[in-house]
Length: 410
Ligand code: PMP
Image 1 (cartoon, rainbow, N blue to C red):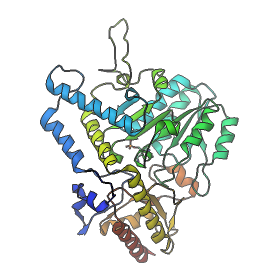
Image 2: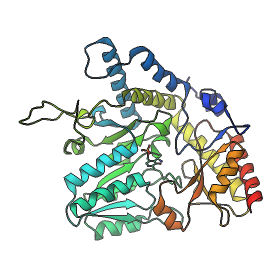
Image 3: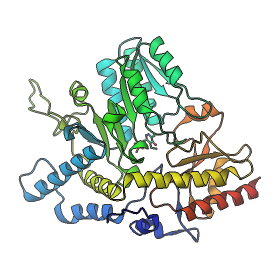
Image 4: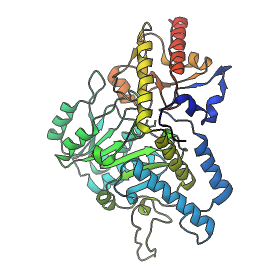
């Protein structure tokens, strides 16, 4: 299915789940920043492995194992192309963004941090890119310091510059796109600033990977991590990409099958990239599904998809800001398909429950970004996030639903 003209209504029929009803109403699924629904082609790719060529990869001479291995390695190539990686060997399959970021926090701490060093983490970061640093940096007597954000939700680059001068910084960790605000961080600029100080840049791409074209080299990232399930792929698989020479300089992480060269009680040697960081049976079926999801996303025209999502976001913003009391946090028309809504008196949870009764699925809470909530002095938001299958009619349903809910609760 190659779509030159982007048409969400045509695409919707590829997603079986979207036809269901919730509470007697057609489902309006606007929780895409948490996870996306899966197109039939991904479901079929998963079923094809289970029904036709399932066998553990990399260790069999038999036909099934070779077919599964080939499909898994093809998925690695697809991922490398999707993120503009210069070579496929530096694409490591993980179980998700969280796993990749924890691997980095452990190993970069081990390899680079010394007593008195600093890891800079953005104030809008998801807990997955903050807590792993807090768990690890103290092991070496290093500290984690926030890069503040401005009142309008942008990363404060002046403060970043000052911190780079003032602190002994070794690592900057920043989201490509904020999962709460939808803010697209100027990663290339941040990387230039950090690299001028010899500082490594870790990018959490969980939300950024599905926002238009991603090129890790243009971004200037040293590492980029994301999850498959947020980009129409299965759960249980993710990707960690790193610059080859940096990955090669890291010690092994988990030990087990496939990550070794030779093993003996006298001493063990370790495999080359990417297998060095893929101990045990990897989520090969999910990785094959992710490869298919990325192909699907490309066939839809990723640039057109992100323009479509942003059109929906702007339409949502226009409507929601007309509703008495509602405020969209950190909004900018250049944000990436996410709206975080607050009301001074009504709890976001109550709004979310009422919307659910109307068949509208949104997320409420802190979105695993408590420091960001503290920054704005709030306990949470109601978040609507858009995907390629959402329509203008659904945005209008959301706006009408919020108007009704506010009317009932105010
Ligand atoms: N970072 C960001 C910005 C996210 O939105 C998420 C998912 N909410 C994660 C990291 C963690 O992803 P996962 O739970 O799939 O590992």
